[in-house]
Every structure is written in structure tokens, then in C-alpha cells.
Length: 227
Image 1 (cartoon, rainbow, N blue to C red):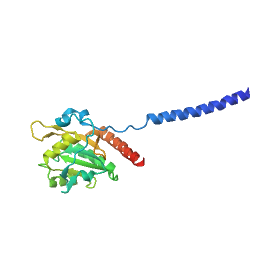
Image 2 (cartoon, one colour):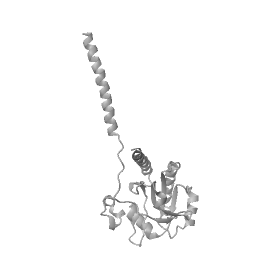
Image 3 (cartoon, rainbow, N blue to C red):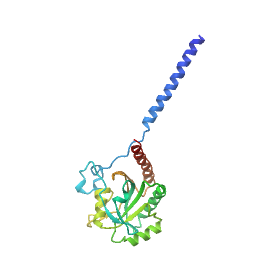
Image 4 (cartoon, helix red, strand yellow):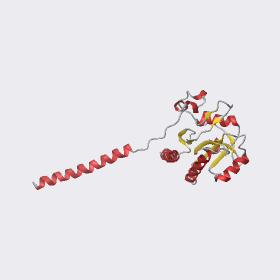
């Protein structure tokens, strides 16, 4: 009788160990981080997308650009080559949502300050007001780190087209040619110039989500590099 219980005790221990292993495997499978979506014009809110590209359902990327930053330096897509970056649209004289957006961008700047893979890019929607000198004053006032964050100005049509045809984050102002209704949206752009997330830039939850997704995106590229 004693041998019988010893025999089944052994099997019970083995069964318990196997159960733990199986549960651990299932837990790992269920908790694998899903890759971030790739945003396309066709699955965005139509009012945020220029009518000429609303039908596009794949291969959407940020277009090449040539703008000027707060130091008078030309900024192009080349300055963001092989970088993940966060983009937004603002103006320095805004007294409503822009100060909150800038404060939240500053929080992101702190988070990425020692990360060579990640940068920030803020486009002025009033380039006729936001000269290089104005952007420089604003950058100094707010604590912008020039090596991490470009505030850019330039041709208004180009900025309008970037907002409506590339980043897909700004509504058009029907009362003004190349006019934009200001938006709180932040866009997360990957190293392949694709939109991987859009967030409420005045919301703490939005910024928290962005930082979480930034980590996921970095892991995605780290995994590709290790394969």
C-alpha cells in the first residue's frame, strides 16, 4: 500500500510540474506585445485627411520635406533618417492648447534625452508669424534641446500638405487657403517614415500611451536587428 502511494505521489509531482510549465507557456503567449498598427489614410477620420488620398489603404509614408528650424538650419527627412520621432503642429502665439502640448513635448524630451534613436519635430501652422527668430525665442523660453527637438517654419502650403497628406492629424480651415484648424494630436513616426500611433497631446493618458508605444516600437526594431 505504501509503495502504491509513493508511486502516485511521484506521478502527481510530475503532473504538477508539467501543469506549471504549460500555464507559463500560455501566459507568455497571451502576453506577447502586439506590434503597433500602421496607420493608413483610408482608416483615418476623413476630416483629418486630404480628399485626394482618402482612398489609400497601404504603403503610406511621410513625404520628404525641407523646412527651417529655430537655429536657421535647413531640416529635411535626412535629419530624421533611421530615427523614431514624435511630430505635432503648433504656433508660438497660441494661448489655448499649445502651452499644454509644449509642456507635454518637454516631458517626452526628458524621457528620450539620452536616447539617440528618438527625436521630436514641431511644425508651426502660422509660419508667417513664426520666423526663425520667433522660434528661437520660444525654444529658449520653453527649454527646447536643439539636439533632440526641431521647431520648424517654412512654406505654408508645404506645412499644410504635410499635416493633411502625410501626418493626417489636422483639419482644414475652409475659410482660408492652406488654413488649418489647430489640433492637439501627436503622431508617432517609425524609422520607415510610417505613422504608428496618434495621441491626444493635451492628455496625460495620451502621453502615457505614447511613451508605452514608443518602448514597444523600439523593441520591434531591436528584434529586427537581432534576427
